[in-house]
Image 1 (cartoon, rainbow, N blue to C red):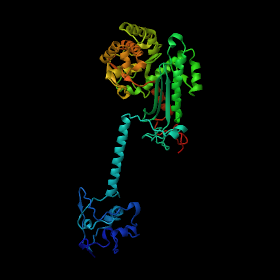
Image 2 (image 1 turned 120 degrees about the vertical axis):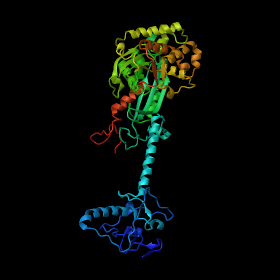
Image 3 (image 1 turned 180 degrees about the horizontal axis):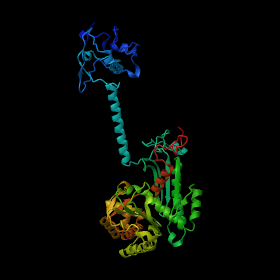
Image 4 (image 1 turned 30 degrees about the vertical axis):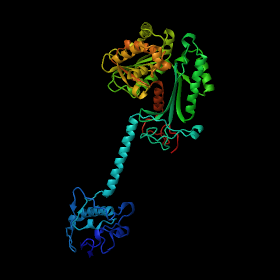
Length: 532
């Protein structure tokens, strides 16, 4: 049979080897003919390759093998006993090649006898399918790298809520991360929301977040306001009316934010001001009536533990010991952490000693004055705090590690973040640049000396201090200086995090959101709210 396109004698049946059937190969593959003599019909549908356009160029292989042509009528004879099993395998492989290649019409010039052909695909997959799968895999890898890069950079973006949903109290849907909300994929496409509120002596703070990668979370809403709840507490022993009014107004804002989201679990705490005030319980009852929030008063040990839990990510590998301190408005918590032997995911498990000093920036400033602080007044404040530290019985439990390179101080409070902002010369406070910043002794000494040289108006004019902290910052520096003298260290790390982050970490860990492949008896992930 003459093939005008080929210009040579074509084998009967073309490339598919279909006997005397002279139909095109593409038509033969759709029929029920046995193209290779194996007793199986040719496959079609998703197993057949698409037809190439006639203008497409043949794909060249890296190591092309010439196709051997056999003169018409010539047969190859072999010993049946020698070739029986290999012949069966050859038919199976050839059948796969037919399924993958012969269902499409190839350009005439690419099918010339003796022309270079691509290497045989022994796995039954065409080169085009392999290329498509490779492109898809590369695209998925690129998208995954981009997503991991955004997550590693700690991009925090509050999610948008439609006004209608906000009025109805509907939480926005969040795309699950690669671990899902509970260590696996959530079929609902929504992550559980957790909230933590801290009402302190000076500030009212709220943090709302969803789980991220193991041990991490993503903030979706936040609130912070200076309320000075402990104003006048040191002299009167009671919370003032104006101070309580400011706190209640701030808590109403927090209640609105919580009401706009479907919060799975929340922890709302009150600290030293409500602990020490005679009318602390009365104030919390008022908060529940007017703001609809029920706060719990935590003890000093719990406060120290939460501060350590919140700052865990800032304690790097290779660290042997840390003295962590949280300078508050009415109290200051100090925890000694020893991780020289081993380390567990919860840093709070390594606390070897702790204390809570009944002094903070508000109480110290009210006692010594915060507006006009001379070097003599500053030294008097440092001496007061030092006397309190002398009564701390466990202060020497890190003495064998304090002189090593693996020891440092870790401060979480408005005092150290303010010092860091002044040190960086920020025109506007930027948490991303402050949180995790390292300062050496020379830096800290220089910042304290600079603040001491400023008068009250100069402190107010600094954007990292402002009018709200201008009369408190030097009292905080005095507490910091007393801690530095008791535990000398070459390095201080600044943490713009604390109780709220500790509460969120413990809430999510206790809820099992970071445990992978863990299901209950019904097959749901722990805490999974939505059905399959």
